[in-house]
Length: 350
Ligand SMILES: [Zn+2]
Image (cartoon, rainbow, N blue to C red; front, side, top):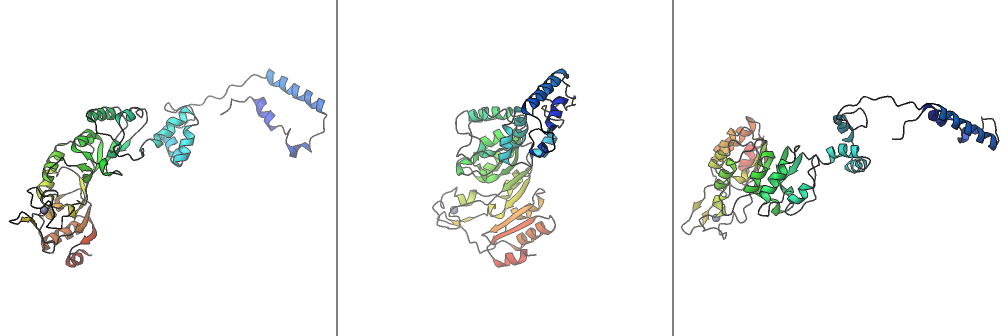
């Protein structure tokens, strides 16, 4: 914005000199005559007192641009693209503060295999960051947990961390890292939290249940990937802690997590009780209907709103009944993906 103009300045601007349209209507003057006129104008202008600009009342939080408070600026700037916001942020310090509120509220960092180190976060502490994701944090070194906890305590606006999938498997976090992020965690996708080595699902749930999540609103239990699970000759079979028998969720695991808001669950995460043959192999027939005690328990999960029905295992009639009740009485959305037997599909169809 330019300097405040005096009245003389304003009048001068409206003089049609130099405007081709107006020259025809003006009386012709010689060049020397015009020179004198300009000089006289100049004199007049110097004589007139400079009128001070009218005082504008400003909202205190405003950065001197206009009478708008930040909230109104937010409503205007929200219509701009990221690119335009970035350009606008170069105009002035005040506009940078305003544009940063939008550019940095939920920053999307370029994916890295292990997240950003504490040293990088230290350079970002002046920014108005509100939401972050678990893959954004680097937890590999000995003192990183304390370091990141300290960094987080210096972000006064941070109110939300989402524990979610990153681009790489290495973006999953350990239970120890989850403890650091816990005060801010709003959403968790449980397969993004790594169980400790040789830990059963029950031990995992016990650890999880000990953590306090004051802001947690949603927990998703996705499809549990078990390589070789449906091949009874799988190399891990025969070992006492075969992944087939210990990696998925049992009834007691859900009971351990009953204080957590589980909103979405894939039926594939349910642990069946395998029979173990004399040779140590997990005995498993997917076509034989199996009764999961976890399925009727789903009716007690008050936060549950989506169940993905992705079952390689045939289930009992009672289980089917519970699933129908879940849909018809509790209003849970059943997403039918894959079902072992046609009978199940027919019964779950509306
Ligand atoms: Zn096995």
